[in-house]
Image (cartoon, rainbow, N blue to C red):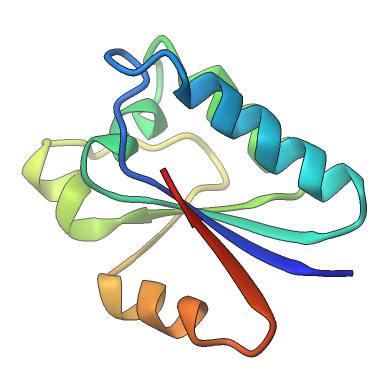
Length: 108
């Protein structure tokens, strides 16, 4: 079992390939891998409860994929209500995740 950290910085409202990124992480998790997605910059937009793409995030959470949103990015975009199950953290947590032994990181 491998450990994957996927970092999403793109806005799904503007970047159509963000949907493929969600499918990739679901596929990795279904194969028994540990999967975490860390949302930064405009990548946090779909975690807003009720947004058009919030169901994608909810599906990730239901699939036992850890979803973490960057606090600074949320604050800068005025996002306060998050999809249930989404954690928040600062970028120092992202660094901690990146340096964990055996972690494979993919930035989108």
